[in-house]
Length: 355
Image (cartoon, rainbow, N blue to C red):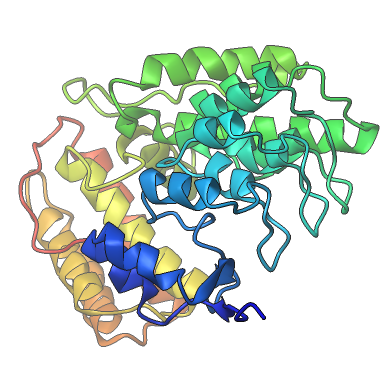
């Protein structure tokens, strides 16, 4: 009578794989079934860190290329949605390109975030439009997870899945998400990867066109200060001028390039921390920023004595972490007033804070 093989991989299996000892790897399966699983329910054929050579050996020994893990994924599912893996060798070994897991997610559904793998699967006969049990399509899954950093990939995937039949509700959701994505992209355009920004911009326009976004709803590139021209803040109230200054002088990430921009940025960050977060994140970094704002407003053309005193008292209270609403609002109000007094850009250097 044949000896029954164990169906669980040893706890040391990861270390055996990591050691690179192929013979030790083979030895594991003298006492265990080829489809033995680890504590996460994966076979060795599912595991990302197992070398392809080892996986080929398992298949040569008779392991089913479409063996399932606990969630119903086949190895092709796993190899199709990972940057460091490729579905090619499994397809060559006869993997089912139309397999679905316990959630009804096809292999192509999982590969939707990885254009090269998705294209390989489509060429092999996969249905890239099959919906999961919850009714979602591969394209909608990608759209719902898109961010400004993935615009190029989103456009590539949308081209691959151009025949996706969206419901009216999905089309409305998609249009709303594309509009928001465009706004987010424009907000960070000046800090976007220099090598990718032009392609992302071109692909954003293509996405607008593809999903029929009206011209009036497409985000415009925000106008930023050039660093040398005189600074003017339009508006009839300090609040209007502050908002204009924030849009014009404050970058999407990091500190500003001018003292004027940094004054506005610091005042805005501190105001938002107390008005928006109740001071929950107040720390030494914020305290340094408040002190820096006071120093900035003493440079160039300083505030009048009475306003300088108001700012000093407000910052003293702010630094203690329990300011009144009026004291909080004093910072953006007088930061704006100082910028108006100093239209000539003043270069901004190193800082001792990181927010």
